[in-house]
Length: 158
Image (cartoon, rainbow, N blue to C red; front, side, top):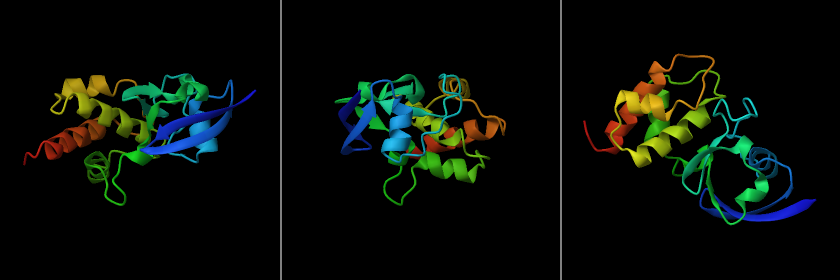
């Protein structure tokens, strides 16, 4: 059965049609061309498909597209302000906190959720906040350092 879903995605009102059993991850990628949402595992174990759903960090592979009706979604595509990178994106580049890129969008969304709840996290809090995201290419130290640097910049510290 096909369903018409109305939702807000990255600040814009959107409509899409999906099947009742279609995941939100598939709807975002295939119906709305938001390919920053990556499929890593399909079981909620890797965090590559992480999004904010009504401000809460979720794995979109574990949510049905139909569940997005009337809700607010933020993907990695909504993090930047037009052509201006978000401090997290800039610091990921500066700290070389990415390699193949499959996990990067999920890490960025998870880090944004963390910094919105806790603008000045400790290294341990960053590691805990990003624990649901897996990277198969690089160590996590560069990612943690990038999040720390973004927190400092976002807090107006030097």
